[in-house]
Image 1 (cartoon, rainbow, N blue to C red):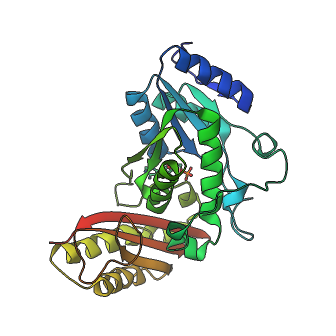
Image 2: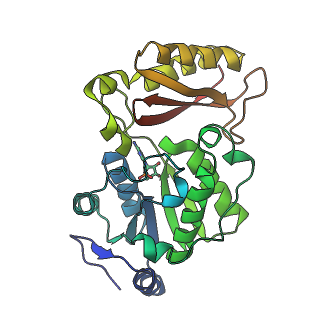
Length: 290
Ligand code: AMP
């Protein structure tokens, strides 16, 4: 089955999507999947374009997954605009937009979930308990629905990318997980659907995340051996933004997401999470000890 170029087909049932993809694969087509929560921007489009360049059929899923939000988080307020999302998917070359409603994804109360080990309790998992179990559960469901494919995830959500890659290996899922670079505004702020929450003052201060990461990376690359010094430097840069409330600033091993052995050695991942008013922003940067 060949899906014509142009406006993507919108599919909202699991059975309908499976039928299309099984047909495509039996005709020898390679399937690319880009899982999202919608309210798309150029960061999401970069994933779709990468999938387009490596596959014959590109599916973008749009689903705001209730399992990954804790009580009191922004599930109800999370921005949604399906018509605009379909436009952006068309521009970036998607063939199918899979936009199921909650009942289609979770027709019954969920009693079976993915429970993650060590990677999920640190960093964002420490301040959002259960969040990554919810992410992993919906991603496992999407992988099961879509079947054999390459799936594209942003490095912007580095902990999520690490966890999803590991889950695919641990569960022998027939999915190649591909990490893609972070797309940023000209002033360094990583694109995020949650940037829509920022007031103009908060928006003006939000590039502090990127500046903190760059300051931390400069220290690491200059040979600073002590991770705590790097973390303090990043926290200090963020504190220069008066509206910022820091959640964490961490220098970790990219494989384990835990504090690197002292002294810092080899590849180091720097990650920050900062609240500006209602928005909780995250960003990260890889570097190597000098
Ligand atoms: P979300 O809709 O926020 O769940 O994100 C869907 C996917 O897009 C995830 O794999 C994110 O890591 C990725 N993504 C979000 N923001 C960016 C960005 N600025 N650059 C690249 N990928 C991104």
